[in-house]
Length: 521
Image 1 (cartoon, rainbow, N blue to C red):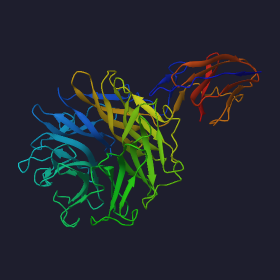
Image 2: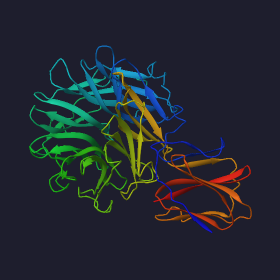
Image 3: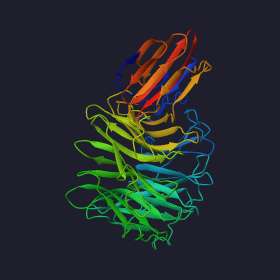
Image 4: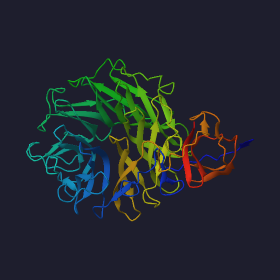
């Protein structure tokens, strides 16, 4: 006899299920990791003012570095924060877990990169210098213990003034020869352009790069804002961001590739510049990464209707869209018809692509957003809700924004950003998510040959069957942890799950039980 059962599909953004006692648990891909600060989330408050984070990296010993800002009581400084692998603040780092540098004004930190010698370069901008009242590009290099590296321009700090232009730096990469490449934007008060700079290891501008160490590139006639950069294995540099091609304010994703000497690479889309219009209104390029085969991944927001969606694009090495990626090189995920924007991305060892950003419900607040795509561009539905996970950090009706993401060597996903606690206090956030689902089951020897799930995973229906001699209790849980089936299974009984999602089937006979994961694609 067959018992068809309709299952309502719902997936919580993060979960940790207990199915049958302390000796059995399941952590779904995308769930918060309870071994990290007990609940998967670190909220760190260093001052009564603005503390935030924009980028994250992992040291060779597994410790976690976060680049952000810290209010020193007078100004806001460039700051590095270091956490232990369990999420606790590393008090061996500069005695209090943070290292900061005051660039003589209000400082904005956006990115970091760890050198091969374990020194750390942090980039951003500063609002005031002895040289200029313009916003200037700022770089700071810290030693591995958190002290300023005085071999870097004498005091560990470099401020670059683009005379007559306001400028900022949004991303940084270290070349194999130790030279430092920085991408950002310059603004003359009317329009903005991409600016790419290269520094020698001692902090001086590299004059072999376009003659003076910097290149300014105008992609359109209005505003160009660079957000991310990467360096190919051949040394060529790619910068991505957002461009407004005309004064109608239609935003597109803009990408430029430079040769190693700073000249524009005309083999890249014939003129070195790719302008990609995804939607009719507003598109934004926010992050970039390279696959091992050299193909280029770009994260971005795309506005396909009244709301903004979380998008990913893949380009071939010549700058053309890769049509093997979701059939046209572009895919997006829309969650509940409200806005979501990715701000950074990372590539897992298995080639899956993970994005971080924020989810705006258009009513009360923003939440952390993490999304995952398969290597073919499809949303990974085993990860959260159709590939999306949202996390309300503080439970307040305020903003939670994820800015940086990195993958640990064990596959776990680290994201950083900030949260507003609702009392005019902005705090640093680091969250860690599970990469894959796992089952811990001390009575796993009770794996009965008569218990079968087929086909699994499935793009359609899946059957759960028990053909043993004894009756057993069956429970099926959805990924909210809600029990959706509870029956006594008899010989030749079957159940049909017809709604997509992740489920867990548990059969039990007395104190013995076993659990199997079910995936409906």
